[in-house]
Length: 92
Image 1 (cartoon, rainbow, N blue to C red):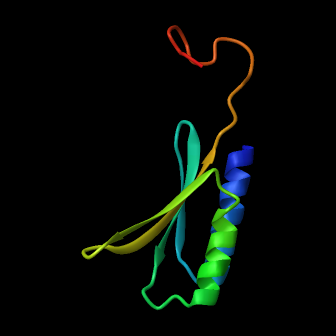
Image 2: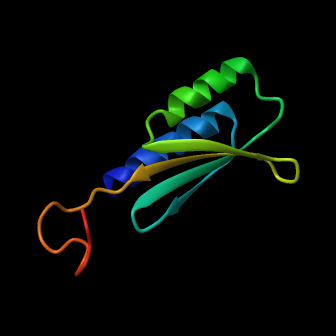
Image 3: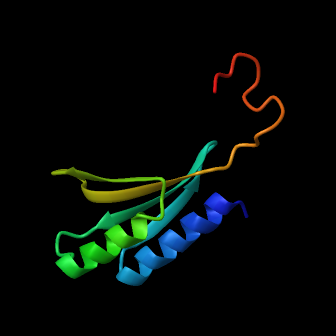
């Protein structure tokens, strides 16, 4: 499993331990973890959640009146440093 998958799995496991159901998805350049956040999450649990998602490269919270609150965290996949990584026209 790539390092991004290991980190994402660890984030998902820790969020699950807090009581948040999670799902992990693989994308081309990153691995994401998403979790639904209940309205009743305590301040202490929020601190734990923030500590957990700090291991990700990016994270955020989507909140809507229709779908509730959804937490996401993204971990970048490593890009090889040699060769024609992005193909013709790829800019670094």
